[in-house]
Structure formats: C-alpha cells, structure tokens
Length: 247
Image 1: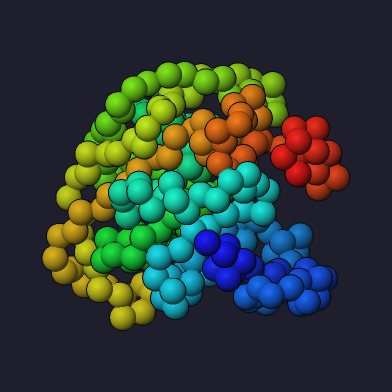
Image 2: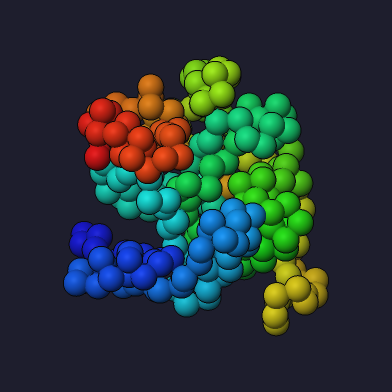
C-alpha cells in the first residue's frame, strides 16, 4: 500500500510549502501564523480544515507531525469498527479523566464517513467556538453522549507529565467501545444552521495505548504510532525523539 499517494499535508507557512514542493505529495497551502493569531484560534482553524477535508474526501486520518508512524496503521484501523477511532491521551481534560479514567487525544485519530460523523464534526466546530480547544471539545462531546465504556481487559500505565506530576491512566490491549446515549443527526446546509433529522448511533473506539502511545515509557516493538509527550521547543523535541530512536 503506497502511503505517499494517500497523504495530504497542510502547510502553514511558505517555508514548509517550498520545502515540500519537490515531493510527490498533495499539499494544501493555508498560511496561519500561530504566534500572531494564537493557539486558541489555531484549534478553530484546524477544525475548519477537518470539515473541508471531510467534505472533499469523506473518511480521513488526522496525524500531528510529531505523532511518529513507526508502522503502517491502515491495516489495523480498517479492522477496527467505529465512526470515530481515537488514540489515548493522558489526563486533559481532567473531568473526562476523572469520570472514565482516560481521555481521547486529538494528535492521532480517524473519522469514518457517516451521518453521525458529519454531525460530530459540526458539533465539534460549534464546541470549539466556546471552548477554544479541540481536545477539550472532543471529550466534552464524548461525556455528553456516552454513559460508559466497555473494556475487554484493563491495565494501568504511568503518565509522567512535564509538570512533574504522575497519573495512572486506564488502558486496554483491545479497542474500547462505548455505550451511547441518544445522538441526533443534523442536516447542516451551512455551519451554524441545522434541523433535526433521524436519530443516529455514533460509534466510538479508543485505540489500544500500547499500539498508539502517548507516553515514551510505553513505546515498544509493537508500537504503531508513537506520540510521546515532548518539549514544545522543536530542537529539544527532535533530540528526545532521536534519543528514543523513533526519529
């Protein structure tokens, strides 16, 4: 399977766009200066890009640039059922973590095309206008519509945060599905305008943490996507990745 033919890169500045120009990749050049416009506005911008990508392509995978693909995830993902397939985060937002023992991470996820997924993305866009953070908005949607989650097995892993605090996150060796409350399908002729349609079932799966990792301690030979907590400084981030032998 030729991954390069299925990659779409969102280039946020001229330097990245120029660097990638000679590669045989699909690129969308959408200038966005985070230092000037701020992170909160960036999350809104990113969600708008999700909507555009979904509208054009349907199903898609989103991966942060520092979520390192150690293996091709497509074979695993295609066997995993669900409209939403999310990697596991650590403890933010805390109310989601306190209630369910895990949080969904926006660094790596898959959206499958369905009426429920379309509703989810529009509700996410609406939520980000208020919350100013995509991971907070995603987990608030999960808290709103899911009353519990089903584990085939449970184990705990340490998450050592950069502030020095350590938490035990609830993990599984298998995808974790949820018991959903009623989820309405909306017909969106434009963002912000909707009407009630038929009830839809929004299916969600939390991907196994050992395969889609968010902590450097859990990276192993079985890891598919390594997205360890890392310094914000790019030089320090790359150094850590090289020390972990994943870059």
